[in-house]
Amino acid sequence: MIEIPDLHEATLDRELCEKLFQDIVGHCRVFEIRLKEHPERMVRPTGTISVFDAYELLSTGKIRGVQITYGHQGQEWRDTVIGSADCFRLVRIKLN
Image 1 (cartoon, rainbow, N blue to C red):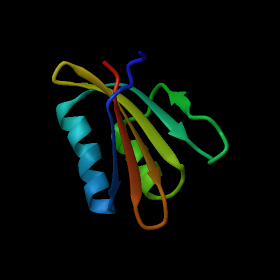
Image 2: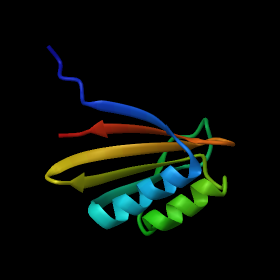
Image 3: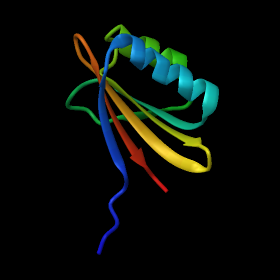
Image 4: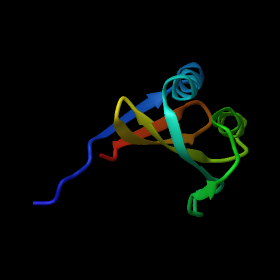
């Protein structure tokens, strides 16, 4: 039988979303950041953007979403955060 990765979902207000990004910077090793600029376009990898810059683009509505792959306590995770008018949707997947 196929193994399905651990998946977690949450709805975050602006303050909690900002805290999430701060925690990633302070406690994780970031491997990759991808930006989703439009609902119908795929996420594109970025080579030079910081986690804080990605949050700024997301929180101001300049991009639709951010996908961050990172390591924390020996595990690899991928967080996808999609912004809307009044909240953010977080989907977290454990990769290993």
